[in-house]
Length: 273
Image 1 (cartoon, helix red, strand yellow):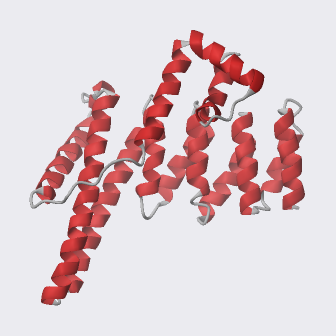
Image 2: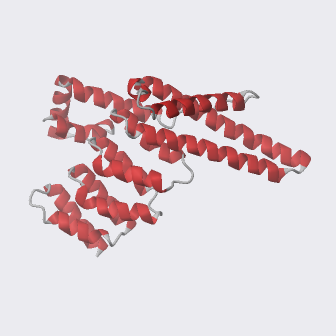
Image 3: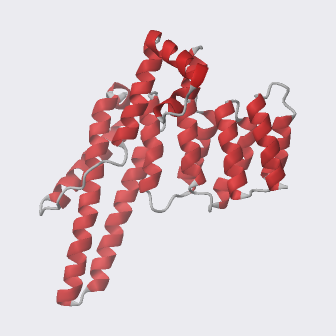
């Protein structure tokens, strides 16, 4: 088993779904391939970390610290656009992750604190409209921060950082066209199969957006990985997306198409037509 084939099985191996000959071949390959072991460990760390960030208790100084850190980040971002900057290339992923983690903690804590304060203010002073307006403004700033982190990390050379970027879509309340286009670009062009699979999962959760559905249909003929092709068929069937029929038929005409993918497409077409 070579590296390319081994990376296709990493997600299933972590989920305990690789059995028989493939499991033995994969474990033999991992024992002798440091690069694949490193990617497996990075992927395991991401799965364990995402969704486990604790929410701190809000304090009086939380808003001050939040805006201070946000100001520092915007200043760094501004300098990165200058030719002599290059701070992003020199910044190690671990340091960037700590900043992203801090942003997440402060943002969630700040919103939670403001929400509780707004409710108490409404009950005591009957000034609910002003409090709600403040909360909307603050929520908008937090969302903008998350989008900025997504756009920055999704271009990172590290597959681990790009996986983390895709995970930010779950925290963005209103996904706009720029985010959708960034995700579709990652689905179609990212060199890492695991990143494309996680991106497909994120996009399928946004399928109520017509731009997303159209992008998924167009992506069918652009995929070369059997794993991603199979996952796309499942998404099209689940969405009952009739416009995918033409693209799926075009894939069937590919003489080099994986046999299991071919069978899945044939079964999928029966459920779509």
